[in-house]
Image 1: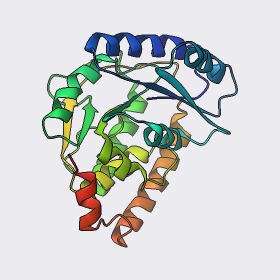
Image 2 (image 1 turned 135 degrees about the horizontal axis):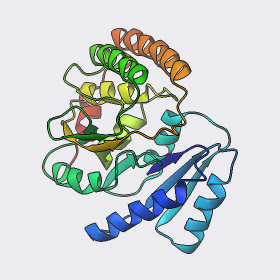
Image 3 (image 1 turned 180 degrees about the vertical axis):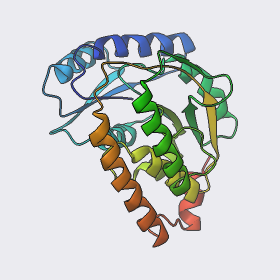
Length: 246
């Protein structure tokens, strides 16, 4: 699944690269492009892919709602036994799917790409300011969502379908802090979470506006902590069993 907002310059290459890797893996697949209310030709380009290849589907949000909302819509629309999402800029290349699949077939419910695990490779890192802000956010997000996480904002994650449905039916945050919310929900559901090192490359043409995104994300982390303290993310044994279904 590929969430996209104003990605007319990259969506074709992203679909082509993901399709090539999935064909190489050799299992049945679908590619869902979620247009997050783009104001350019992103949706039109994705629609052309869908028109000529039934393995590609387009989900359109009527207006820009945020990456968290786009990922939620795409995940819940997916029909496969396992579900992945990765960014349209391919900052994490589709090869990560092949690396993650064995883990999902061998006991993991959730696979999380990490730029901070041993074996990860980071080309063209972010600037110093963004790295500092990212490290600060990670410290706070780990305290709220998952103390064991080494990377919560890498744009690559994979799920077994029961786990994906259980998590994303409960998510509420539309913006960039959705990664922390999914980690918190996965922990509350008792899901098996594994991190894998990824090859990651910063895209200087990122759509993220750092100051605004960080400010909003900090507010969202406060909301997460408040909700969690009041039992909003508490899961019943029935919910935990459904999420862990194999």
